[in-house]
Length: 84
Image 1 (cartoon, rainbow, N blue to C red):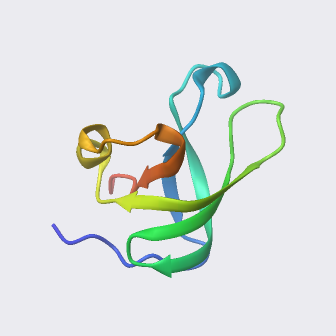
Image 2: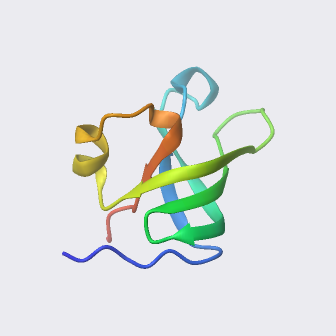
């Protein structure tokens, strides 16, 4: 499977603290800046009362398996959601 090309407005999933996201360890994030195919800036949309969070220079991975295998803090890596 080839990884999608990142572009403004696309949705990815990013690691978040479950305490601020109604128990879930990932949240959707909107791409706000594309640096290259593997690095983006995003606005994180958590399921809670906190304001949307900005994340910069987020490493973009192909899927949840690659995300889980990648050595790096959950807050600086994201992955494409599965197609349904």
